[in-house]
Structures are given as structure tokens and as C-alpha cells.
Image (cartoon, rainbow, N blue to C red; front, side):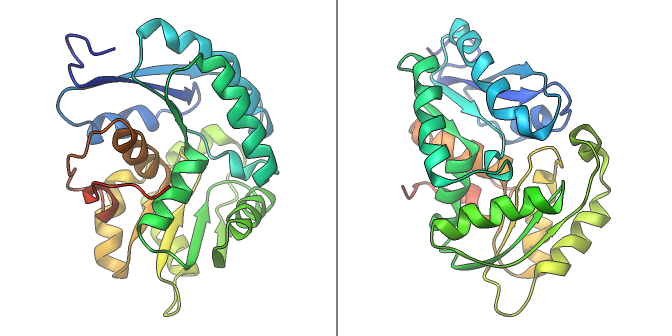
Length: 240
């Protein structure tokens, strides 16, 4: 429900307590008239994220949100199309009719919007987490031509990965046959770097927090172009 600080809408964003990058990223992308409200949850391992998110969803209803955002890359957790469908149903029960978006769906929408067919992917955690994401996108018809994992030992340590290492990782997965570069795993905090990366690699770069906020705003009917964060944030329409 719009309020004094969010006359165009209130967005409730679910993020881990260990992640200090997502809140600043969402704020720097926030258009005038939107209020971002952060709801934090604790995780003990990457595999517990889904359950932790579901537990917190009812709390978001207390700020009368116009959109609830589940901002985590669930596809990194031994995921599948069937699990995503089940999880969406569970999230909907707890949202009690409020609109919501999940990062995993937002990335798919962003890839389709940018016309991605064959992309390179970078993620922060283990090879197993990366492979789960690769399998998920492949099941949706994309060709994940190359993927690399930064092998960060704990999710909370991903917030301090140097941006030089991020650039190196994208160089590892780039190539002349790659049409898009993708980052999943929202703790890295690379949204401020996306425009620079696009200029460097001469192709679209999609980062999960950028994609999720773009998708949430467009689903709310907020079509403002938001410059400075890559080509995707200039696109007014979504592709379901």
C-alpha cells in the first residue's frame, strides 16, 4: 500500500542477515516514489535459504507491501523446475495474496528480455552450487556454454570478493560465441559494476539483484528507465 515515503509503492525485500551488499544495491537502483523495506533472515548454510525465506514472508505483510521480493538464487541449491513450482506455491500461501517475485524467476525473465541464447555464468560459491544453476537454466532451454565458481567458503564471505576477481571470472566464461554474461548469487554486490562490465565485454551483463529489482518494478507497473546499472534497467517491458 503506498505511503508517505513510497507514494508509488512499497517493496518488501527478503535478504540474509549475512549479506551487507543487497540493501545498498536495491537502494541505489530505487526510483523516486518507491520505498524499499528490508526483512532479514538467518541462514546456517546455502541449502537452508529456501526454508528461511518462507519463515519470514508473513512478517513482510505488516508493512502493507505492494510487492514482496525473494532475492536469493534458489537455483544454486540442488534445484529443478519442479521444485521452483512447488516453492512458488508455498511462497504464495505465506504472501496471502500479495504480489511477489522470486529471483530465480526474475533471472529467467531477464535472460529472455535480453534475447540470451548462449551465455557464460559466474557464481560465488561451490562448483556444486554452480552446476545446479547450470542444470536449471539448461532445463529452461538456455545454452550455458561456460560457468565458473569463485569457491567462496562461506556465503557471508562473498560480500568482500574484490571486483578485480569478478572481472577475471567473467573473462574466464566469455568468448566470441557468448551473447550474454550472467552473475547469480546476490551477495557479491556487483550491480554498480554492471555498466562498466557491459562496456568492457560489449554484451549484456545480467546480475541477479539487478534482474530481480527490474522484474519487481516492471511487475508493479513502474517502467522508469534506471540508468547506470546496465542495459536491462532501461527496458520498460518484461517477458514472461
